Image 1 (cartoon, rainbow, N blue to C red):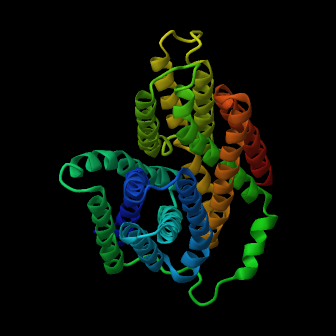
Image 2 (cartoon, rainbow, N blue to C red):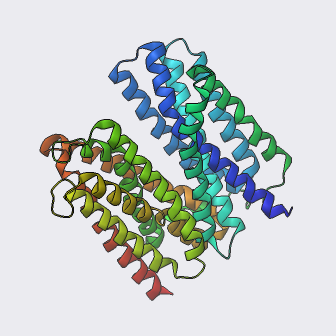
Image 3 (cartoon, rainbow, N blue to C red):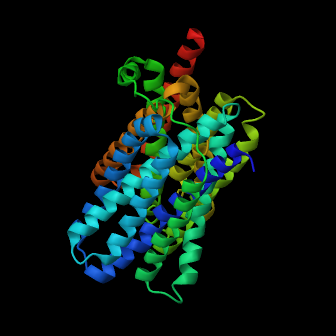
Length: 392
């Protein structure tokens, strides 16, 4: 097998296990609730520490990869996630559990960013397509984990399942250790002075803010759609609403499979705008779900809207990260860190804003937040791409 194929396989393995681990946190929360009888505020502190860890991992991975390479980044990050899972099961109080959640977020954020940056470095000719395919492996892990948990829970306790995941992560660590990775871009000395250019690059900042809205939209769809569908306007039972979220994850995965082919045939910007339209259509569909205007059966409109949203979400990160990689090939890891931190900040801020809006005016206003957000993203992308083309 070619060296580059081994490296791409390493990225796929990292992203697959990242998807498994992130989805397994639902199992972890159930275990913690049963084991420690945590209060709502205690569970809330864990929910805050995880994204804080992801943000820290996203900030650190780029400069680390540019200076020391991807091998040690992926090994250390995977071991952090494994240690976090193991610490969680071994904990006897809240403090170690909080540390564990931060470690899982820290390692997960670095794995996510590092695998994306490495694929962008290796696949220089079809970056968008390659990054789309990488995203498929996150979806496979996320979709496969509930099935795996459903099988294992017949034989093991939740604690044993979490230990199994912690041990499972050792397999890719061994693989990462054995293969050769691309050499560090700045193995002798890291050019800190060049990082200042990021803050003066309007195009890079603009690309980051496209992901600001993209990340926020994906987060809002995952966090608020079930609540909206169980509200008085739509009226689905909670079990059905949560099940429908599977269509969202599945359609993102399928969309990235399609993108892997489409981006080899079509302009990445055209594909991105098509996906913006799908997000807008899905948001409008959610707005009218249960109203009887589009279709009398809310279940049909809800599923269709979530599928449109998922397909629309499939292009944002692969296309924008590919453009970042093209813009800074010698500092791709650091540039990825820069835009991913902006993206995660958007996810946090707009989800918080959604909570304020729905808490004040009601959950029925949630689709309007989606519509406004995607509209802002379309306007911003138009300005950025027009400015970029004029400069070129």
